[in-house]
Image (cartoon, rainbow, N blue to C red):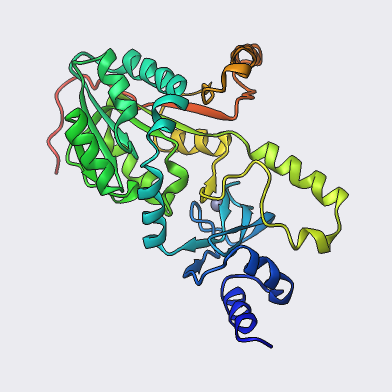
Length: 338
Ligand SMILES: [Zn+2]
């Protein structure tokens, strides 16, 4: 056996490939590297160990499984790549300006309209995972009166948001945020599935949103589609072929989780947000040829959503808006505490 082959076998065995022999050629073709990762054996949302496997995929030279928690219905990746590698990955990803400025313009407009509609005059907004501040720049153009804060894990993104737009920034992971104020609007757009410990986020959230304020969450809406595609694959392919799968159709391997609409609605309700409403989310801006088709699709999705009394949302992503109620008015004189 060559040294190269031996090295690849050792790497594969360390990185989740039980049947390493079968993957050697694949590893060589894909330039596998040694990557440190940790196994996740319990659901990071509710702690339940029992799960079913949705499928497997390869990411950063590591074989991962997407598990479905039997307790809360969260779909979660069973491996955590070295955080340093992930940090470097996102620093690089943020350099792609065009993606943020052009392709996301429709959803930025939709989110900005939502913020505009809910933020009081001179109110405060926190964009968690707000990257370089492009979304909040759109909000600022609509509502120059708002006080905007951006938090992001990436130092370079925070520096950019502060120097380019003058936003207050907090350079921190979402789950580790320390803020000594509350906000009228908290936005978490396409960010909660990157937070390795979602339980921390849920503890934090009620302390970030002011009474009467709202939280806006945007997440992919693809769990049913992914499970359907996997069920069809199970039906039409052999186990041997499935064991060599390196991707899950419709699933972005960067994401640690897929939160279902049901899970998020329940979670926000349990945190005291009431009401919690769901909306279809605008799509990424398509190329010129398919622009009309996309517009039509989005309008149909809105009609389906309204026609089914908000029960069915068919867009690839959805928005949840939760309001934190004002404290109930208590009449009379407050009793002094003991
Ligand atoms: Zn769970």
